[in-house]
Amino acid sequence: MKTIPRRDKLKIYGDLLSALYSESGAGKIVLTQVQVRINVPFDRLKTYITELVDLGLIKDETSLELTKKGTQYLREYERVLDFMKRMGLEYR
Amino acid sequence: MYDVERITIEVVSAIACFILVRFMMKPFRLTGETRYLGLPLGFGFLGASYAFSALSFSPVFDFANRGWVQLFVRAFAFLFLAVTYYFSKSAKKPKLLWNITLGVLAAILTILILLAIMSPQFSWPNYRLAQIYVRVFDLVCLSYISIHALKSHMEQPDPTTLMIPLGYILLGIGQYSLLIWAVDASIFAFFSGLALRLAGLAVFLFVSYRTFYSSEKRGNR
Image (tube, rainbow over all chains, first blue to last red; front, side, top):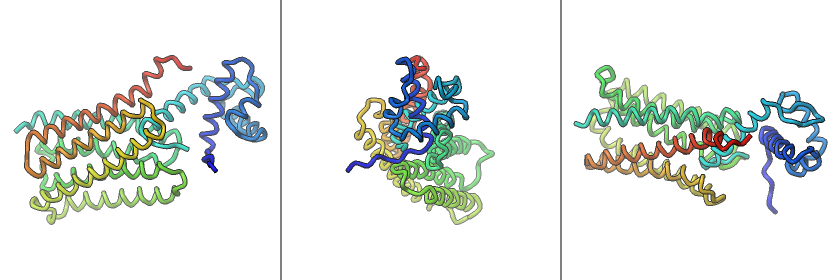
């Protein structure tokens, strides 16, 4: 059986911000779709969203729009992950 | 002979490495995981060894065992990089083990440098022999890193992941040329080694620049 590697919070935050960003491009953000995309239980997803709001990366829990800080964080996160991939380093 | 050319290449290599440190810090700064600290340390020590090599032509740094310091620092630079790749393979390897390894390596390097500066036992005839062994060691480290990076590329084939193994391979061939120079003093091998090193570092700079700056031009987000 193939095992899914455990993700740390940083990876989950990155995946969540990425999912919210791409879902917002498609129109209204549907939380269940985000949940499926990042593969976390719904109650934990709500907790992560609250934490991201507290960190100032998402505007609020209803609009789920990324703040300027959130967009900057996501951009840097994706670049560093891309860099690590190019360097042949693994990040799980 | 060829001192000006050599100093120029050493200075350019040192500058390239110090620029690379800035990029290599990013994985550690983002993740906060000490297992990625070997990247900036490796390139930092590599840059320091090139800077030291350039400075050794100056009368200020003209002390007896300067060659040893440069040799140790460069070997540890490659060792830090190799250890980083070894520990990056799996998150299961305990953080404590990495922290201990990092601490032990730093302690050994400090002791070796202090010995090289202060101890008269590090004499010239031993240095000639040590230079060959250390370069073989460097070559082993670079081979390990190249194989690791190539394996990573093979797992997820992508044209963008092919450049870095190429960079490490160029550094490795450069070390091999310097090994030939250490054995038979061939000036052609020496300058080929330096040129290959510059080419390798240029590849790293190109990849880093493309990742962090050219994506901005692509206009994503």
